[in-house]
Amino acid sequence: MSTLPASVLFACSHNAIRSPMAEALAKRLYGQTAYLDSVGVAPDALDNFAVAVLDEIGIDLHRHYGKSFEDVDPSEFDLIVTLSPEAHHCALEFTRSASTDVEYWPIPDPSAVEGSREARLDAYRRTRDLILARLKARFGAPSSPSI
Image (cartoon, rainbow, N blue to C red; front, side):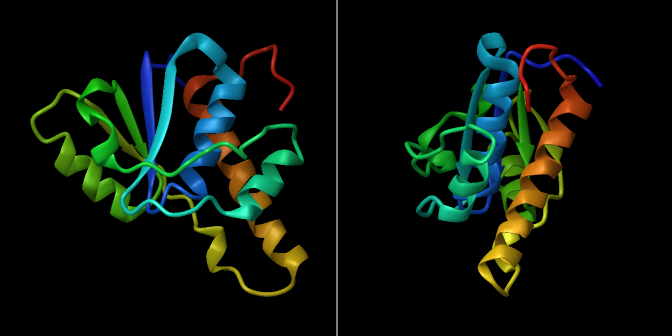
């Protein structure tokens, strides 16, 4: 565990599932402690299952819109947490001449799971819970939020 940097960018392939989840969960955990944002390599529409599993724990993701690395200045972040191989490669390219740290957290893409609606929701819940556990392990578990 280490302290939370002043600014963290979460990145995944489409900024539709994993990185918006990470951004929203981090904002719930750490509030105004840091500037938190998310991007994708090729932004897409927000995934409704991601919205549903965050709704289950009282986090509203409905207003999120997909952004790309081109929409932010990655060098202005202290840390970029990448959640997919594509995002990791892109982050390394964008920060080649910057002092930004890049960490890779291999988080499985829940949209790859097929089956019933409930089976798919379970995959998204596992992703949500895995991201939450990684956040707490890396940055600590604040005493106030109840997630």
